[in-house]
Image (cartoon, rainbow, N blue to C red):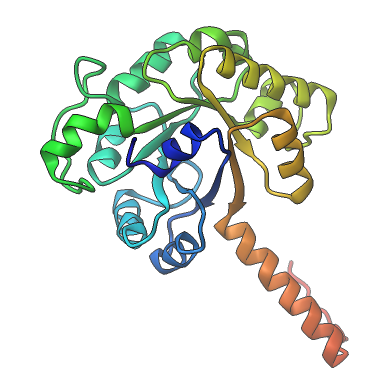
Length: 265
């Protein structure tokens, strides 16, 4: 059996529970990683995290059972290979629109003969030759479906050899169809798009994943048959916790807003 916790859970027919991180604070990553999430995605696309931040967050997760993953900024072989060499056990690639782009992503993530990844895992999680022998089977690859074009090419993307999962990019997918960047999973069109992505993935023997950041969204995603649920974001959880603490404390002390409001002009 694979040493990758996500793959082990999938092999048992279970759903993976994941959390996202902005990569800004390795201590926070370590604490969250110790809570029992199956995996954590360090987001390099829409945060300030750079390569060194990613590497430090991998160090923070080394003492936990949480699988370290990265959403890379783009379908760029150089950064895909660098994060893998730094210790990523999974890579999520944004905006994969067709089979050619999926193959380019997988090629960067897999050693020959499956791909063209260059050898040099300087932070492998096991002896390097043992790592090399199992990397093509262990490393996780997620293609994000985020555009009208990708939705039209679902079957060919899902069928790409070496690809493990499709992951929905709900905001960009909504924008691509003329909507707002929202995650309204109760919208009929949005729900249908998610079901299409799940069906394409499962028909190809692959997995499907999505963001499910509220309790109702988790219930809906599970009902749809999603295999990988990103149920938390470190920054959002910090805001939520801080907001709740502040609201409760204001209530207890009878806090009132300042009488004079400053004017910004």
